[in-house]
Image (cartoon, rainbow, N blue to C red; front, side):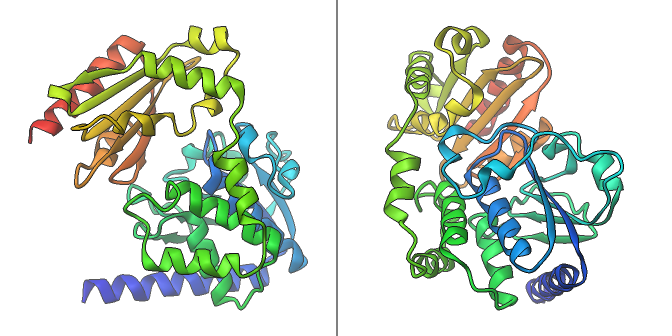
Length: 331
């Protein structure tokens, strides 16, 4: 009965969003800090469809779009400066933001939006929107966006398909992560039917890497430590590493996944020293829920993939989080 109620509520939220799109004229779209393929791909796909429907759209990302995603169509239209204080929007749609703060300093903009929409697939998402479409069982936000388009009988163009495919393929780790479902593969298949060059997208995402990215990967692997009797892999990147190698935070994309490769590892954590905080990324196997750890430190995510940004010294943050993970691995 509870499952049916959730389904009914979710269908109602989809219908409310469809009605909002039809009746609204101006939209503000934003994703989370340090945006990834799912955030950017979903944002660009929604923006494209809204514009085809005659809507005015402002796309925003407080942090720059990573280099490996700049091949996506219309990506240059994403702005890093927030709208002026005079700007008003009929709707603000937040993508993959478990809470508004995940998108940066958005509060002034959200206050000037008639409706706020929360589109997310993380189970740690807070229901802060006027409309909340949160599907923890979806592989990605892009999969949710495709369902929205399907419900609205919207034809997906090749360019929009490339954006949504990018969101799905990156958030599933090339269909490797447990969140991949039969529906995920069906959606990917339908996107491929549009005829976009998926092999080129795969090549740009996974067979092309900046020299800085390769160097920072090497530095991270050099830092590899094994804890909890070999069940926990710890990677650490210092601010000096980034400065010395000319690398940026975006160059660490997918680095954490190498931490899960040693036999016997059940969880991996990567610490990244930033200007004012420590960026922490988690990965795990099986039923080990790292999203609970991330949430306890102000972040969120999925059971097997999560993250947070924590104030404090690198030493203190490392010791606190490693202690929690070690205790979790003993249970």
